[in-house]
Length: 355
Image 1 (spheres, rainbow, N blue to C red):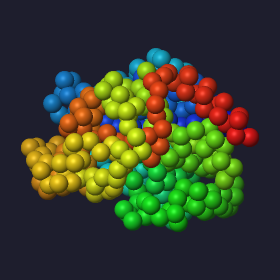
Image 2: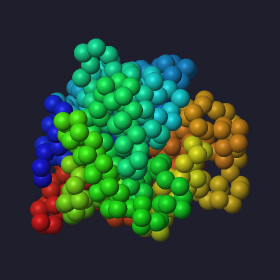
Image 3: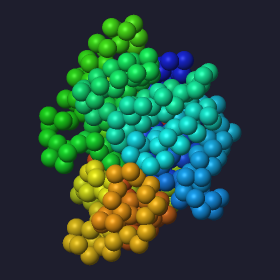
Image 4: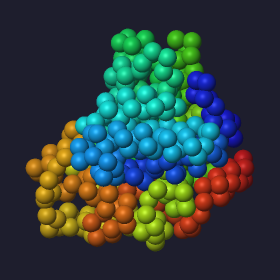
C-alpha cells in the first residue's frame, strides 16, 4: 500500500480509523491504530456524558474529556492521532478549539458542512483540517469557501458513501440508490478535488469511507482514485476498542439482516443494529426523553423519539435493551474478537491477495 501523506503528516498505512461515538473510539483504539501506522481518531461526541464526574456542566466536562483522551493517546503512541468533531454538535466550537490547543494532528469534521472550520486555527497551530463530504458539490463549496474566506485549502477530504455506519449525509431514498454509491461518487469527487488542487498548485488527498471492510475493498477503492480509506466497523471488535464487551459481542453476533436504517433524532438517517430500542421506536412504544442537554443543535428534544446521547451511551455500555448500536453495512461480516495489530496484518494480506 502507498503511504498516505497529509501535509507534513505521513501515515505508512493509508487507513484512517473512523471516529465513532459515543465513546467507541477514544484513546485506546485511536492510539492502537496510530501505533500500527494508520491514523487513529478520537470521537469528541458525548464526552460530557462520559466525563460527567469531572463536572455537571456538559460543555466543561467535554473539554476536560477531550484533553484527557488526547493526553492518554499521546502517552501511548508517537503515531498520528486526530479528532472527529461533528458540525451538528452544540459544542462544536469548544471541541475544535480544544483539539487545536492540545495539538491534535488532524480534525475530521462532518455531519454538516464545516464552512468555518479554518477560523479556529491559531497562529502557529499545525493541526490539519479534513472535511467529510458526500457529494462533489459539497467538496467544491468547501474548497471555494475556505479559500475565499480564510485563504486555506483543505488538507484532506473524506468522501463518505451511504454504506457507512452511524449518521449518513444522504436522504433516505438515496442510501440504496446506486447513483449515490461510493463507487459512483468517488471518481466525481476526486476529479473535482484534483481540478481545484491543480488550479491552486496543491495536492489534496481524498480519503474514501463507507462500507470499506477488507483489504480487497481498499485495493478496489484506491484504484478509483482514493489516496486512502477510512474504516470503522472492523475495529470495533478489537481488544483495544473503547466500547464495552457487551457492544462487541452484539456486533459479533449480528447477521446482515440485523442491520437496518434508522431515523435519528438528529434529523439524519443512520445505520445501526435493530435493537429493542429501534423496535420500540418503529412500533411507537418508546417513551420520550425525560431531559435534554441539547448536545446536538439539530435535535428537537421535546419531540424526539429518544435521546440520541443516552441511547449511544447505553450501547457503549452494552445495554442491548436501550442502546443504539451504530455499525456499517459490513457489520454482518464481523465474526472474530481480535487485536488491532492482528486486524491490520490481515487487511494487508487481503490487499496483497487482491493485486
